[in-house]
Image (cartoon, rainbow, N blue to C red; front, side, top):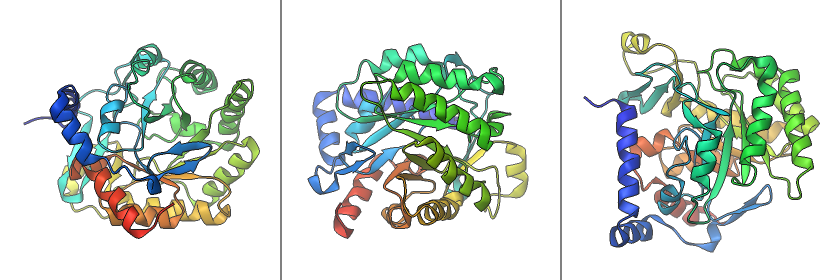
Length: 335
């Protein structure tokens, strides 16, 4: 039996091997990439070659973003990155629920840290758009979290194209407290202050939880208005376990963690639609959650998403999911 985390590392190594083998790599890239200008879209001042990206968590340490770009994705969000490297939660911490086409993870922001990530980002070979997903170290008290986010913003600024502030991951015990309106506003204002001093400021997004109610989503809209950040990523993983096909005893045995995949598809779409309609589309939205098919992707775009991200869908549907979605987008409408 192979643990899902082991399989993920093996798949990452295989991708590197494929794209380091010139003939094979070029053949895979040629098949996977849908190179059509009609797919290009400009969002928060960045031109994306297509709207299909990879969500944070897949390339935590910025090790395979070039390879993912060669698989036809328009952008990759690396991380979550923390200032110092940390091991995350004890293993096993990633679990598949095949009957639900879902994952439960309680990784706990395991990553090699800012310095190692920057070292990897300096090796960028192609022009893939890269987002940096920012999180605090687990042992950083919440009252000092603002400093972690500031350190990451400064450290990654020259190497990523946009930033996502992650305060909604359910796998860091007290992180959810930073979703409080005052705490979050302070973090975002601090980053915007640093951003404003740069010659060319970069977009800042907020990743939101699917477990927020409408009142809390209204607060998100208000925070965006107050801080003037550029948009949201909707949504993160959920702590709910509703309507799963996996036997209840198995789910309970797995324990805590964020659920992703098909079970959050509808909630993700609801959050996207609510934020888009309630704000009168005042800001861009990157839609993520339960995208497995081209039809799932179109549902997110039609609900108000400007771009989409894949995570669990890649694991279950395979490496050519971006090709399938981009071809469907071309058939349905062009930007």
